[in-house]
Image (cartoon, one colour):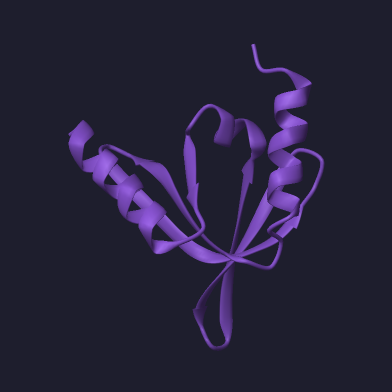
Length: 94
């Protein structure tokens, strides 16, 4: 069972990084991995939002829950080295 302190800790860690570049790796289903790259925009009580610029005039917004992070449904990286490590782990699992 996930404790409230784990959720609070996860949220406070992300709140400290609002505005920073972030990369997310999530399961897209059927052996497909989806990578989102953008900026951490907001942290609310149960979800965090990432703004992903697609073009100069259009941005996508994706939201994930803190539970997704704790259960590793979504993995995050704040620099290229962390992203490479996540992608290598995904390749090794196949």
